[in-house]
Amino acid sequence: MNYADFPQKSSVQIEQNEWLRNVGYIWIVLGIFQLCYAIYLETSLSGEGFWLAIGTVFVIWAHFSKVKYTVFRSDRGNIFVIQNKKHDQIINELNKRRKAQLLQWYGEVNPDNELENEIQKFKWLVEQKVMTNEEAEQKITQAEFLKKENYVLTSDTLN
Image 1 (tube, helix red, strand yellow):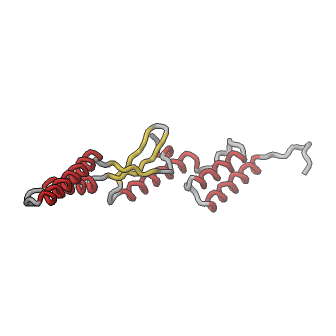
Image 2 (spheres, rainbow, N blue to C red):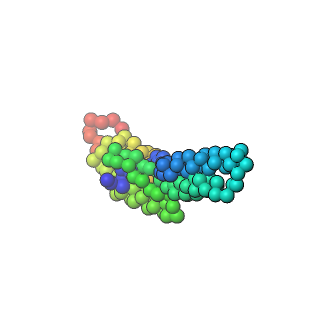
Image 3 (cartoon, helix red, strand yellow):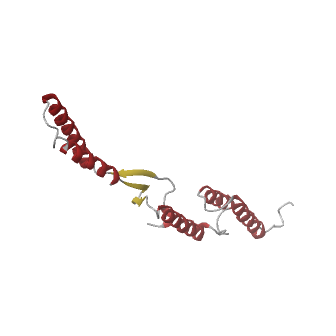
């Protein structure tokens, strides 16, 4: 996949162990039921909170074992970036490489293209946040100048 194909829009996906969480909830309910039943029978509560404690540990474990991803969806597949300390650094590097590749491919004026195509190309690069408006205006002016320079007046053309 080329860096130029790296999408700008992203979504967030959270991966978690649902089984661990659900078993924890079941054990919490079982533990509460055991405690309530022991209180109802007026028996000793010793050891009756075991399932409540284990279930609570599992629910906490499930909560802290979540993994968040930033997902960039493209035609060639999805790119998952784990949201950790280096997340922003990774995204910035991908965007920097994307910008460099787009500038390498489309950043210069092509004198063989029509003027309107060149103008649209530089406006598109601004939309892609690869160029600033000022940079694009300079390139458009350069393209206009090249087109005027290559335009030759013939004797049958009025000034």
